[in-house]
Structures are given as C-alpha cells and as structure tokens.
Image (tube, rainbow, N blue to C red):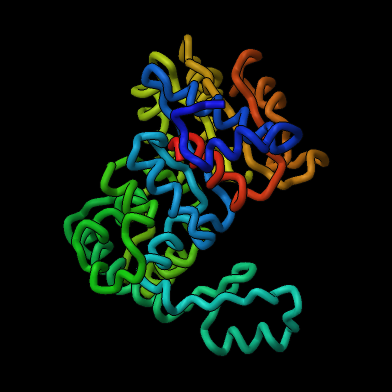
Length: 326
C-alpha cells in the first residue's frame, strides 16, 4: 500500500481488490503512470456530471494539472455555471422514481427542469445567464469576431459579471478552474444544449448569425492542432466518462490525422479508461470494449486499457481522489 497517500486512497487500496473495484484501482494507478514524465490527459465527459457536482473533485484535478483538455457534452459546460450561480434554487427530489406524470407537470409549472433527482431552476439558472451571454455574443458580433462555445463562457467568467450571483465556492466549479488554467473545453454538438437553444432562438429573431459560434468542424480542426502540439514525449491519455459524442468525437482525431490526412507517425492515445454503465452489445459505442478501438486506429495493442462498469458519480471522484493523493 502507498504510504504517501491520504486516507481515501489508502481505503481504496485496502478494500478495492476484485472485479470493478480492482479495475478502479488499476485505472487510477495507470492514470498516475500516464502523467509521469510530462504525460498529458484528456477528459471526455458525457452525462449530467456537472449537475452531479463532480466539480468538487474535478476542479482540483484541473488546478493540479492532472487534466489538460476537456471534451464534454454541452450540458456539462453550461450546468456547471448554472450550479455556480443558482445552487440555492435547485430542488432535490429523492423520491423521483415515484413521481407521476401529474407530479412532473407540477415541476414544469414551477419552472423546474428535472435531471434524475435534481431539478434545475429555469429562471435563476437559464435566464440569469442568458442576458450575460447575449452581451458577449453581441460584443463579438459588433467586432466581427467568432469564437468556440467555451471561449464565450470564459469571456463571461473573466468579465466578473457573474460574481454577484455566486452561490457556491467558485473553487468547486470545474469550468472556473479550467478558465483560470485556460485549458480548452471542446463541446461537440454544442447546439444540443439550453444555451445552444437560446442562441438559436436569437438567430431566428435575426439578432445573430449562426456562424458567430464556431462549429463542430472548426472544433475538430482546433483539436488537431492541439494534439499535434501536445502528443510528443509521453503523449496524451484519454479518460472517458460515459459514451456518445463527448467521447467519440475527440478520440477520432487520431485516425483522422493518420488515415484522412495521411500524416505519418501520428501518436496513438497512450492510455485509455472508460467509466460506463452501458451494456456491451448491439453496436453501442458507449458500451464498446477498449479493444474495439484498436481496429479504428485509436489505441495500440500495448496501450494501457481500463473499463470500470459502474456509476460515474461514484467512481470518478474516487479515481480523482487517488490521483490527487487524497
């Protein structure tokens, strides 16, 4: 057992010896090994991890340079900031499994949008951000400038206009931590989000042109350049929470460079771990075993590969705690 680690890590090493528990420990040790000698790590994050308040551990991972770039579903980008500015207005529904359709309609009438056991308050979260997003969009439009979705969020955070609303300690916001470190947050399919819907509505009204926000192809071009600059030496690892576009989009940059651009000697991903609760069958990308990625030119035979089949809201904070030495 490691003697230089904290009580959480020591508990994990002592008790987590078999099955998914052992896979968790192996993945955490492999994560540490990837970071040695200057190795880097991408976090690909699907699901509602921001509403699950993963920022409590993820923000520190970013501050301590354990994560160097993020690809996430659009909801995770916006919902971390929503929790930052409207936390006290959220409503927890622990008996969500017992809700009737009528109960759900009552939540709707209260402008509470439910994510499992947690309801996001529309007025305090969505609308509180909207006017400030309009300001950064308007400024870019007037200057004839265009940005990726996360860059607009960073502009809003750096302006200080949201500080009046802060309802949690900003150190527990992973997007704030990413903004302070200025690491990229890739958001494939950004339009599949509340802020994306808001932007679309303002475009329909004629206030903005859709091209104001850089699109998915431009996001891939950005990632290509980032990967070329950061894949030397120990290379880049890939830590994935969930499946879908948040993971599939960024991991494909490697075969795209090698096969479509026909660039020579493109380094493969140097580590791979996925936390998944998806069944491994029926063509599911979310449930694909890591070896399938060898056939797509994403991973090598010798790439350290781990899959922890469990709930990411339980597993991710434990792995992060181990990597942080807590």
